[in-house]
Image (cartoon, rainbow, N blue to C red; front, side, top):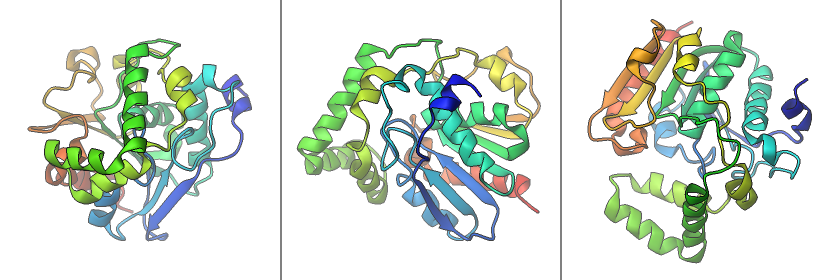
Length: 262
Protein backbone atom coordinates (compact mmCIF):
# COMPACT_ATOMS: atom_id res chain seq x y z
CA UNK A 1 0.00 0.00 0.00
CA UNK A 2 1.38 3.41 -0.98
CA UNK A 3 1.59 6.32 1.43
CA UNK A 4 -1.32 8.00 -0.29
CA UNK A 5 -3.52 4.88 -0.15
CA UNK A 6 -2.76 4.52 3.54
CA UNK A 7 -3.93 8.09 4.14
CA UNK A 8 -7.28 7.74 2.35
CA UNK A 9 -10.00 7.87 4.98
CA UNK A 10 -13.75 8.24 4.54
CA UNK A 11 -15.03 7.53 1.02
CA UNK A 12 -16.16 10.19 -1.39
CA UNK A 13 -19.74 11.37 -1.70
CA UNK A 14 -21.06 9.97 -4.98
CA UNK A 15 -24.14 11.27 -6.82
CA UNK A 16 -25.81 8.45 -8.75
CA UNK A 17 -28.39 8.87 -11.52
CA UNK A 18 -29.70 7.23 -14.66
CA UNK A 19 -30.51 3.53 -15.11
CA UNK A 20 -28.70 1.17 -12.71
CA UNK A 21 -28.97 -1.63 -15.28
CA UNK A 22 -27.29 0.42 -18.03
CA UNK A 23 -23.54 0.69 -18.77
CA UNK A 24 -21.68 2.55 -16.03
CA UNK A 25 -20.13 5.97 -16.54
CA UNK A 26 -18.05 7.76 -13.89
CA UNK A 27 -17.82 11.57 -14.13
CA UNK A 28 -14.82 13.38 -12.63
CA UNK A 29 -15.20 17.15 -12.29
CA UNK A 30 -12.65 19.96 -12.32
CA UNK A 31 -11.33 22.08 -9.46
CA UNK A 32 -14.03 24.04 -7.53
CA UNK A 33 -16.81 22.05 -9.26
CA UNK A 34 -18.49 18.96 -7.80
CA UNK A 35 -20.40 15.85 -8.79
CA UNK A 36 -23.52 17.99 -9.14
CA UNK A 37 -22.09 20.25 -11.86
CA UNK A 38 -23.06 18.07 -14.84
CA UNK A 39 -26.78 18.96 -15.11
CA UNK A 40 -27.09 19.41 -18.88
CA UNK A 41 -25.07 16.30 -19.67
CA UNK A 42 -27.24 14.22 -17.32
CA UNK A 43 -30.42 15.63 -18.85
CA UNK A 44 -29.08 14.89 -22.33
CA UNK A 45 -28.25 11.29 -21.41
CA UNK A 46 -31.46 10.62 -19.48
CA UNK A 47 -31.48 6.92 -18.56
CA UNK A 48 -28.88 5.90 -21.14
CA UNK A 49 -26.21 5.18 -18.50
CA UNK A 50 -25.73 4.34 -14.83
CA UNK A 51 -23.90 7.52 -13.82
CA UNK A 52 -21.66 7.84 -10.75
CA UNK A 53 -20.49 11.43 -10.21
CA UNK A 54 -18.28 11.80 -7.11
CA UNK A 55 -17.42 15.00 -5.32
CA UNK A 56 -13.63 14.81 -5.38
CA UNK A 57 -11.95 15.06 -1.99
CA UNK A 58 -12.04 18.64 -0.74
CA UNK A 59 -15.06 19.44 -2.94
CA UNK A 60 -18.82 19.41 -2.44
CA UNK A 61 -19.95 17.07 0.33
CA UNK A 62 -16.87 14.83 0.26
CA UNK A 63 -14.36 14.70 3.13
CA UNK A 64 -11.86 17.53 3.53
CA UNK A 65 -8.12 16.91 3.34
CA UNK A 66 -6.31 16.23 6.58
CA UNK A 67 -3.00 18.05 7.20
CA UNK A 68 -1.23 14.73 6.56
CA UNK A 69 -2.97 14.30 3.20
CA UNK A 70 -2.32 17.77 1.75
CA UNK A 71 1.36 17.18 0.84
CA UNK A 72 0.20 14.08 -1.07
CA UNK A 73 -2.97 15.58 -2.52
CA UNK A 74 -2.58 14.28 -6.13
CA UNK A 75 -1.84 10.76 -4.92
CA UNK A 76 -4.70 10.84 -2.40
CA UNK A 77 -7.17 12.01 -5.06
CA UNK A 78 -6.03 9.28 -7.44
CA UNK A 79 -6.34 6.67 -4.68
CA UNK A 80 -9.91 7.91 -4.07
CA UNK A 81 -10.82 7.42 -7.73
CA UNK A 82 -9.14 4.01 -7.90
CA UNK A 83 -11.05 2.91 -4.79
CA UNK A 84 -14.29 4.02 -6.45
CA UNK A 85 -13.46 2.05 -9.61
CA UNK A 86 -12.52 -1.02 -7.60
CA UNK A 87 -15.90 -0.89 -5.85
CA UNK A 88 -17.94 -0.97 -9.07
CA UNK A 89 -18.97 -4.37 -10.44
CA UNK A 90 -18.01 -3.89 -14.11
CA UNK A 91 -15.47 -1.95 -16.18
CA UNK A 92 -16.71 1.60 -16.71
CA UNK A 93 -16.36 4.60 -18.95
CA UNK A 94 -14.40 7.37 -17.26
CA UNK A 95 -15.27 10.95 -18.27
CA UNK A 96 -13.26 13.81 -16.78
CA UNK A 97 -12.77 17.54 -17.18
CA UNK A 98 -9.62 19.53 -16.33
CA UNK A 99 -8.39 18.22 -12.94
CA UNK A 100 -10.91 15.39 -13.31
CA UNK A 101 -9.51 14.66 -16.76
CA UNK A 102 -6.01 14.29 -15.34
CA UNK A 103 -7.30 11.99 -12.58
CA UNK A 104 -9.29 9.96 -15.12
CA UNK A 105 -6.16 9.57 -17.25
CA UNK A 106 -4.07 8.45 -14.28
CA UNK A 107 -6.81 6.08 -13.08
CA UNK A 108 -7.00 4.49 -16.54
CA UNK A 109 -3.24 3.95 -16.40
CA UNK A 110 -3.45 2.50 -12.88
CA UNK A 111 -6.49 0.27 -13.53
CA UNK A 112 -6.80 -0.37 -17.29
CA UNK A 113 -8.82 -3.52 -16.59
CA UNK A 114 -11.47 -1.40 -14.84
CA UNK A 115 -11.88 1.13 -17.69
CA UNK A 116 -13.65 0.33 -20.96
CA UNK A 117 -13.32 3.83 -22.40
CA UNK A 118 -11.85 7.18 -21.38
CA UNK A 119 -13.03 10.70 -22.25
CA UNK A 120 -10.84 13.63 -21.19
CA UNK A 121 -12.04 17.20 -21.76
CA UNK A 122 -9.15 19.70 -21.85
CA UNK A 123 -7.32 17.85 -19.06
CA UNK A 124 -5.07 19.76 -16.66
CA UNK A 125 -1.42 19.40 -17.64
CA UNK A 126 0.89 18.57 -14.70
CA UNK A 127 4.20 20.36 -14.31
CA UNK A 128 5.81 18.18 -11.66
CA UNK A 129 5.30 20.84 -8.97
CA UNK A 130 4.76 19.68 -5.39
CA UNK A 131 3.43 23.01 -4.13
CA UNK A 132 0.58 25.16 -5.47
CA UNK A 133 1.17 28.05 -7.82
CA UNK A 134 0.50 31.04 -5.52
CA UNK A 135 -1.14 33.18 -8.19
CA UNK A 136 -3.50 30.42 -9.32
CA UNK A 137 -4.41 29.58 -5.72
CA UNK A 138 -5.05 33.24 -4.92
CA UNK A 139 -7.27 33.56 -8.01
CA UNK A 140 -9.42 30.56 -7.05
CA UNK A 141 -9.65 31.67 -3.43
CA UNK A 142 -10.83 35.07 -4.64
CA UNK A 143 -13.40 33.51 -6.97
CA UNK A 144 -14.88 31.34 -4.24
CA UNK A 145 -15.01 34.37 -1.93
CA UNK A 146 -16.94 36.36 -4.56
CA UNK A 147 -19.60 33.62 -4.78
CA UNK A 148 -19.90 33.50 -1.00
CA UNK A 149 -20.30 37.29 -0.75
CA UNK A 150 -22.71 37.84 -3.66
CA UNK A 151 -23.79 34.70 -5.47
CA UNK A 152 -26.54 36.56 -7.37
CA UNK A 153 -24.09 39.06 -8.86
CA UNK A 154 -21.74 36.26 -9.91
CA UNK A 155 -24.58 34.38 -11.62
CA UNK A 156 -25.53 37.59 -13.46
CA UNK A 157 -21.92 38.05 -14.58
CA UNK A 158 -21.74 34.49 -15.90
CA UNK A 159 -24.96 35.02 -17.86
CA UNK A 160 -23.41 38.09 -19.49
CA UNK A 161 -19.98 36.66 -20.16
CA UNK A 162 -20.54 32.99 -21.08
CA UNK A 163 -22.78 31.00 -23.43
CA UNK A 164 -23.54 28.52 -20.62
CA UNK A 165 -27.14 27.52 -19.93
CA UNK A 166 -28.86 28.76 -16.78
CA UNK A 167 -28.87 25.23 -15.36
CA UNK A 168 -25.10 24.98 -15.75
CA UNK A 169 -24.50 28.42 -14.26
CA UNK A 170 -26.77 27.73 -11.29
CA UNK A 171 -25.11 24.37 -10.60
CA UNK A 172 -21.64 25.92 -10.95
CA UNK A 173 -22.50 28.73 -8.52
CA UNK A 174 -24.19 26.40 -6.02
CA UNK A 175 -21.01 24.40 -5.45
CA UNK A 176 -18.33 27.04 -6.06
CA UNK A 177 -17.99 27.91 -2.39
CA UNK A 178 -18.03 24.26 -1.20
CA UNK A 179 -14.31 23.80 -1.68
CA UNK A 180 -11.73 23.05 0.98
CA UNK A 181 -9.88 26.36 1.27
CA UNK A 182 -6.83 24.62 2.72
CA UNK A 183 -6.70 22.46 -0.41
CA UNK A 184 -6.68 25.58 -2.59
CA UNK A 185 -3.93 27.08 -0.43
CA UNK A 186 -1.72 24.05 0.12
CA UNK A 187 -2.85 21.03 -1.95
CA UNK A 188 -3.64 22.38 -5.41
CA UNK A 189 -0.70 20.99 -7.37
CA UNK A 190 -0.63 18.12 -9.86
CA UNK A 191 2.58 16.21 -9.20
CA UNK A 192 4.18 13.87 -11.73
CA UNK A 193 4.95 15.80 -14.94
CA UNK A 194 4.55 12.85 -17.33
CA UNK A 195 2.13 14.01 -20.05
CA UNK A 196 2.86 12.91 -23.60
CA UNK A 197 4.30 9.77 -22.03
CA UNK A 198 1.04 9.19 -20.16
CA UNK A 199 -1.06 9.43 -23.33
CA UNK A 200 1.38 7.16 -25.10
CA UNK A 201 1.01 4.54 -22.37
CA UNK A 202 -2.80 4.38 -22.38
CA UNK A 203 -4.15 0.90 -23.02
CA UNK A 204 -7.84 1.82 -23.28
CA UNK A 205 -9.81 3.59 -26.06
CA UNK A 206 -9.55 7.32 -25.36
CA UNK A 207 -11.28 10.44 -26.67
CA UNK A 208 -9.43 13.72 -26.06
CA UNK A 209 -11.85 16.66 -26.39
CA UNK A 210 -10.12 20.01 -26.83
CA UNK A 211 -10.86 23.67 -27.55
CA UNK A 212 -9.01 25.31 -30.44
CA UNK A 213 -6.59 27.05 -28.09
CA UNK A 214 -5.65 24.06 -25.95
CA UNK A 215 -2.54 25.22 -24.12
CA UNK A 216 -2.53 22.17 -21.83
CA UNK A 217 -2.99 19.56 -24.57
CA UNK A 218 -0.31 16.94 -25.18
CA UNK A 219 1.82 17.59 -28.24
CA UNK A 220 0.49 15.46 -31.14
CA UNK A 221 4.06 14.61 -32.15
CA UNK A 222 4.94 13.73 -28.55
CA UNK A 223 3.27 10.33 -28.52
CA UNK A 224 2.04 7.66 -30.91
CA UNK A 225 -0.99 5.76 -29.63
CA UNK A 226 -3.71 4.56 -32.02
CA UNK A 227 -6.08 4.19 -29.07
CA UNK A 228 -6.17 7.97 -28.56
CA UNK A 229 -8.59 9.95 -30.76
CA UNK A 230 -8.68 13.77 -30.66
CA UNK A 231 -11.65 16.05 -31.34
CA UNK A 232 -11.15 19.83 -31.50
CA UNK A 233 -14.30 21.92 -30.93
CA UNK A 234 -14.22 25.37 -32.59
CA UNK A 235 -15.47 28.26 -30.51
CA UNK A 236 -15.08 26.47 -27.19
CA UNK A 237 -12.98 27.45 -24.21
CA UNK A 238 -11.70 25.30 -21.37
CA UNK A 239 -15.23 24.09 -20.47
CA UNK A 240 -16.01 22.59 -23.86
CA UNK A 241 -19.22 20.85 -22.80
CA UNK A 242 -20.64 24.11 -21.41
CA UNK A 243 -19.45 26.38 -24.21
CA UNK A 244 -20.43 24.13 -27.14
CA UNK A 245 -22.69 21.40 -25.72
CA UNK A 246 -24.04 20.15 -29.06
CA UNK A 247 -20.57 19.47 -30.44
CA UNK A 248 -19.43 17.91 -27.16
CA UNK A 249 -22.48 15.64 -26.97
CA UNK A 250 -22.14 14.54 -30.58
CA UNK A 251 -18.49 13.52 -30.16
CA UNK A 252 -18.86 11.88 -26.74
CA UNK A 253 -22.15 10.12 -27.52
CA UNK A 254 -20.71 8.49 -30.62
CA UNK A 255 -17.53 7.42 -28.80
CA UNK A 256 -19.38 5.93 -25.81
CA UNK A 257 -21.92 4.19 -28.03
CA UNK A 258 -19.00 2.56 -29.86
CA UNK A 259 -17.24 1.34 -26.74
CA UNK A 260 -20.04 0.67 -24.24
CA UNK A 261 -22.14 -1.53 -26.50
CA UNK A 262 -22.58 -4.88 -24.80
